[in-house]
Image 1 (cartoon, one colour):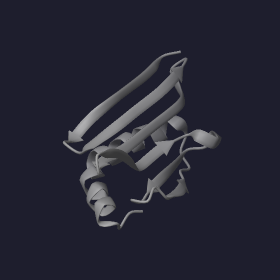
Image 2 (cartoon, rainbow, N blue to C red):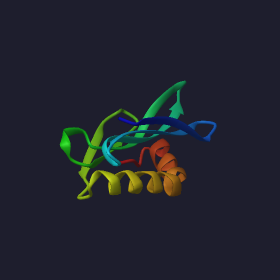
Image 3 (cartoon, rainbow, N blue to C red):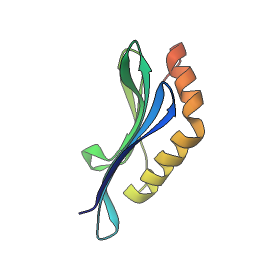
Image 4 (cartoon, rainbow, N blue to C red):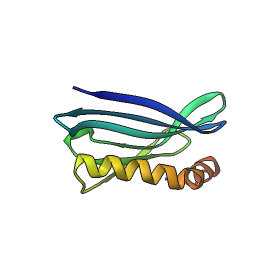
Length: 103
């Protein structure tokens, strides 16, 4: 069962965490998460995953409170969407999070 995990530093205080497991070429588990370092600690801003057996996105505020939004995508499409969304929008998400405008 191939498993991949890596961190990508997007800026000195921002990183993307990527993890997925595949079996027979199909994604069976994944997490893609955007994190920012504030007050000396890494905090999650945005997480895409398939916990609870459905794809969804969790948005977090500075207090660690979250809001869940279901994605009506299969695991492969949700993983691709998550990577692309964070790659393209991480700066906006970070700014909103640090201003307290997120989620």
